[in-house]
Image (tube, rainbow, N blue to C red; front, side, top):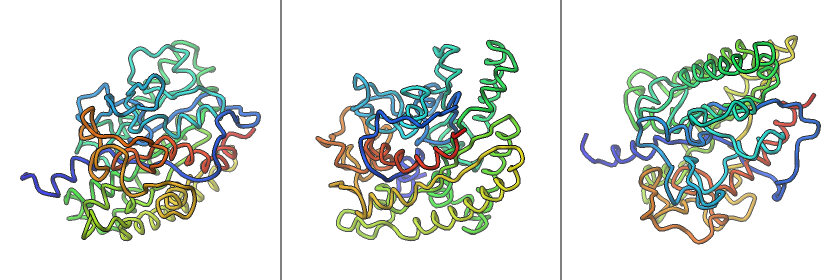
Length: 365
């Protein structure tokens, strides 16, 4: 494939994101009241990957500077941001741990495994074709890793204690953006066979399959993150704007697709919740769209830069294009985005704060 704009976009859209935004600040020492959570278990893409891609043969990694610039000891862990992810804030809030580790880290102790891990892989998605584009861990493989994880716990603490741990764990699922922005719009394969409405139904079907599998494995508390305002991601603005340097407004049609899909997802989750009421299981929609739109459209919060990332030009750089040779802004807290795709730590903290009411419902006794 010649190095055209479409080829270029393929490289940088493969690590997409999904998580949530809004609310006040400085809540770092607050914990969920009487949280009975035993562990945190996470599935998804780069918004939820703390470094699993470090251990697989893919170029889509972030275990080098300037990633991790504001993490402990300025360590580039493989998180696609300058510091912590929303899931790290959530794990601390529910009283589990400071940072959620990647499952594929071979050095994890059984104690670390017991309190939870992330199976997520940057570049992944619900559509089985999406992870093959960037050679990352598919959702079905993440589910296999979870089953492997369960077997390790059973060998260490027994089946009964493992079952109890999983029943009381908080499950979070964050994926879908790569399916639309990378797979459907950048690689034309799916566009040959699906209209946007039919592709939404296909992705929703794949999402439902994962959730039903998790419920079958004993999950009883599941939060599912919707799609963000995809048209406000800096790389999408760069690739699809008529004048990407002079006019950096959100691309409305991408964002409206996210809104439509989120409504479908919300309806599906509500339906599943009604069906599961007698079992005591809880499944909830987590809105990332509204909080992130508030940030990027200036409706809430005070950011100086909302349409370009802190790393490099902020318009196309992500993963290997955001590297030790890249220029970096002096203060990432003034930016919504760290690179051209992923939020800064400050944005992730605000997203976590927006998630709190839903997390409280999921974890309450």
